[in-house]
Image 1 (cartoon, rainbow, N blue to C red):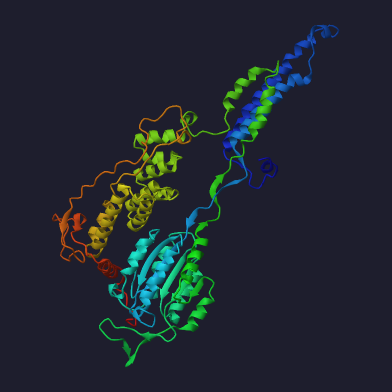
Image 2 (tube, rainbow, N blue to C red):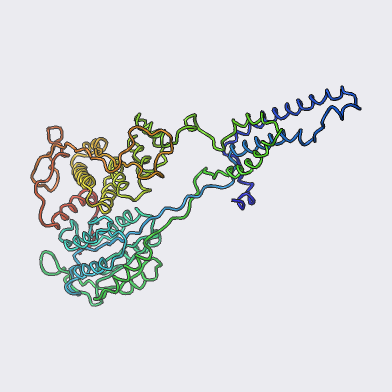
Amino acid sequence: MIKEYLHIDWSLFHFLRPEWLWLFIPIAIIALLTFIKSSSEQKWQKRIAPHLRPFIINKGSRFAQLGPIILFIIITSLMVISTAGPTWKKVEVPGSKSEAILLIALDLSQSMLTEDVSPNRLERAKFMVKDLLEAKPGARVGLIVYAGSAHTVVIPSMDYEMVAYQMENLHPSIMPLQGTKLKNAMSLADTLLNQTEAPSTLLLISDDINSNQAKLLKDFAKNNHHKIELLSLATLQGGKIPNPRGGYYKKEGDFVISKLQQNILFDLQKEKNIHVNTMSFDKENMIAIAEKVRENLVFRSKDKEKDEEWEEMGYALIWLLVIFFALWFRKGWMIQYSVLLFFFTSCNSVDSWEDLWYSKDYQAQKNMNNEQYAEAAYQFESLSHKGIAFYKSGDFESAVEVFKQDSSSSSLYNLGLAYAASGQNDLAQQALSLAQEKDPNNENIQKSLENNEQRMMTMDSLRTSHPEEAKKLEETDKPKEKLEERRAKGKDEELTSDTEVKELPKDGKRVTDEQETGQRKAKELEKVPDDFKAGNGENPQNVLLREISADPSEFLRRRFKFQYEKYYSQEEGAIDPW
């Protein structure tokens, strides 16, 4: 603290509350009047004969006369300066922490069934991904697949068993469009990876990489801080590509041979953020990738400076005030002046009269009880209460930003509801999934996950068949689940006020309201029928699937088909179907 005051940056020096400096005017007036009064009181002494004055008047020192005035000026000046808030240092906010993601992008084109690798390239890829997961990379792992189109299979999650399970269900036959369009995969990967600030890893598993695809990888590596681990499963001799209709693909009468283009891989290896892994039949490559991910798991962004947020530097003047104020109580030092100090007893400014008596959390809870949620949100200092107040006020974006700052299961649950309320159902699903990982036995989280999945399926179906109806639902269909609230568990978390607010949030999780959805059973459909009409008692939000196929790959096939019709139907297919 002493060093900070000895090294003042005068170019940044200013007062946070300069309006308090106007108090120097009445202080100067009071000091001047006191001095004039003291001088006038000495005039009557001249009326006494000079030879009698030493015997009548006990002449004190000049300092004894002027000392109280000087001390009054010093003490009140220090109080005014400290209250005005001198500062020359900005507040630095520690950079936020974020965890890296390991995203697996698997090529599901027909060429992955080539048998130059035993049993084939796709099955070999599944074995290697299993080895990678068993090596415990420590990061959230996501899985996407691509051929002519690209699709998310598993969003980034710590559930490695789910990733391994879904890998077993992957086959080129579930892809709605064949071919190899790496561009779509890189675009989807960029969207998922940029959800975190941490430099993450894209594990791209494919067979032969051509020059156009190599350029896409180079551009991605140059324009992102994420790294690419490329795993090519083709061999130098290559093999014939199976045709799903039987036999093998032919071009101009000759069998199409898919093989490794080694010169392209050598060129990619020169790129800073690209590492090419050779295929091996042991686990060493996958273990090495897992170690790289673990070493760079946590990332902290650089410290930031808050805009117009300055550190209060007037507190140190309190120690000087204590020293000078102690001298005021010396015998005969005009204690009557201390009454004036009542008006300068705080170094902190107050925004209102209530600030003198009630804490910010206390005032915020009063506003919450009066349903003045917007005012309460800006008063709460507790992040959990602040986020809930923003949510109840309808400011879901601000609620999202607040809930993001805490990684507890209750905050992740609330974050999911805030995302869903703002129409970002995909992000809501991710937040709720993370909350479930931290608290797997929480029934409220499980119900919210199911409700959000239902909303996503309903909206995806409606956007295709009835976009107008979908738009209306997006505006009105908000989650009805209640946020999780809690009260302070210790003295340190209690409100700093003498009087408790009446209905503080109770400890533990609150019971989630049950949604009355009017569910009914219906036959399983590929999509919402073209002749479906809302408004005739056929609300799609209340229609649930009665039977789900026991084959997970069939579910993926249907989902990918729907997504293809939604996102890729206008896009030209790949030149080659393999």
